[in-house]
Image 1: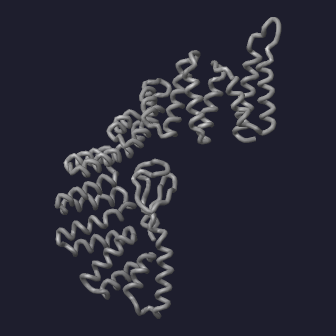
Image 2 (image 1 turned 180 degrees about the vertical axis):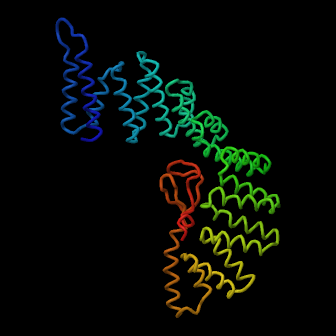
Image 3 (image 1 turned 90 degrees about the vertical axis):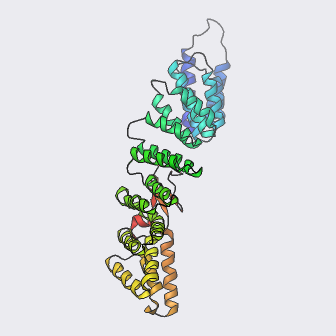
Length: 380
């Protein structure tokens, strides 16, 4: 029996109970409800659940005993994607004068979720904002309101709501809200304001890699590469899975400083730690430019003896043409490229979403700071 059939049976039983409890007239008999009930049961037995539900809803009186049935039906409509039907049902329920305060608040909460599902964010925002003072639903309403502000990109309001939620649970999200505000300020050329938001992000969550990398980028925009380097190196302590993100800005820093030897040391260190292709390619290219192919090949061979990697072998093949005939080399290179290509991805630690670019907020589970470079995390 599917969920529609179960709900239809539930509605039928609710109608029967209500009918049995209803006082009977002393004389005469109204066949209306009897006939409707029997017709609904007939539809249900013939696997016409949608028609049965519509019929039962029309005759089921809203009272203290049947409110839960209406709420359950509204949730099921929403889960099935029939949001307009859910909205109409919940609006009709709220209009009833005989609801208790608790029942009305629950109906308003479900209506807010309907609006959110339908993309009517302004209506959902108003309902959830009103419900934040509810003793029973206040916390749940704040969580829903936080989701609305995230969708609307109202980061200041999101920060205020997050502060009033469970302590510690939303610290990572709050740090990213400050990063979003910093990105906005940076786009407007307000670098000082952007820096303030990034420092607040780190005050909230000291492990926020995004804030650290953005601080380094701000220092580079101000032509202060020496101040940017410590920020980039801090990522190693915050979360080494994100070290691939520091390769390009680190190269910019040392190029501006005119210190290629220090850059080579840092890139070699990053490659030794992550075996990521970004650090590897940058390191090998720098060695080739400074010391030639033979030196680069020797240093790479030493690293590969310590730990082999697909990208490392690809680099080795590009530097060592004397390993075999050209045809075999070409085929081997092509095969390794096919193996390596899928690894240049990002994966969400929360829901497993696999993407070709980095999202600080996962598009699937909406978690903040959960997506990481897959290749470097696997160490291949």
